[in-house]
Length: 117
Image 1: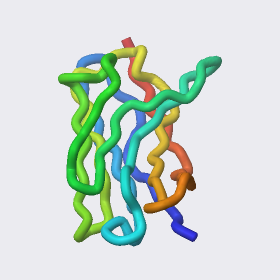
Image 2 (image 1 turned 120 degrees about the vertical axis):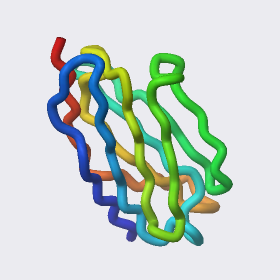
Image 3 (image 1 turned 90 degrees about the horizontal axis):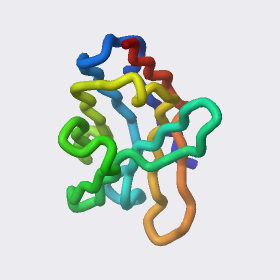
């Protein structure tokens, strides 16, 4: 069982920045892709950004150019740098890690990001 532990998040004004981090034990050997998802009230959970084990990243159109996902396998850490935040970025953010070779996904505990206008 892999336990993901998130940190970061909080309250920020529009235009500000926040960094989310996620500890993903065993990310070098047992984990393939790692992603950040978010869920706003009344909406479905959506993929925000994802990074492969090789470091290739993809982003939702709504965050391209503003968010950056990074991965440090040596430290078992994945981060999401969020710049130029907008009120519509307000949501609970989750990190999720794909177990290598399976369809199983591990989830972090979620962290609230609130962007005030």
